[in-house]
Length: 301
Image (cartoon, rainbow, N blue to C red; front, side, top):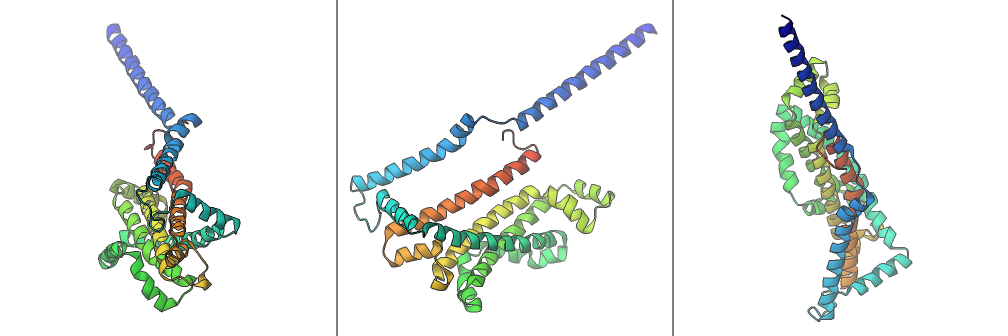
């Protein structure tokens, strides 16, 4: 009898040791997730590569001019010519005006699209009749080029900021709504049943259960919605340019084409690209990392 008790005690101690080792392993995994990288690693892995890529592009660009591979400035201006265009716009105080005109329109229109696309996506995902009725329409609108909305928007609303916002909404809302629908479709049914069991139904269930669980897919749709907003705005500014609307980046691009100034065209293209990258790095990338880290999907910050 004593021998049996001793064996039972030893088995229990061995089980406790196994549980402790498993907990230690889980603690190690958690500590790996929250660990911070040094500035040197961040610089080498994230900052230095794009700097090198930009330097290579400029070197190749200048080589095309230096070795007369492209000897027509009307087709390809030199980096120094584009730099002079930037310098002139900066000294005259026009550079920040170009950027602010477009960025303010783009962000405001995107917020409107977010306010409309989020409840629309939730409605489509949760109500079968609504999904059957307008789900295919949203998918079709998402594939429709944004530039197609500019002519009717001008005829409906005239050459004003309302027309710009209408084009942004028509371009971005379908992407945001479809992203949320896709995210909700991937929510495990167990989460929904658990939420209903705890009384989280209707709007309460959507806010506390559905939206948090669908957040990765929704965030992907929001990110794509911003891309559609920005492209829609550029199309609207290029086609529907007017002195009353001010000069945004799209209008600057069109002005460069009308003036046959390739340096101005390149200036506008670089600014459009810069704003798109800056918005992604400053807003969407940190938000995406935070969501992934909260779900244990990001090993290193």
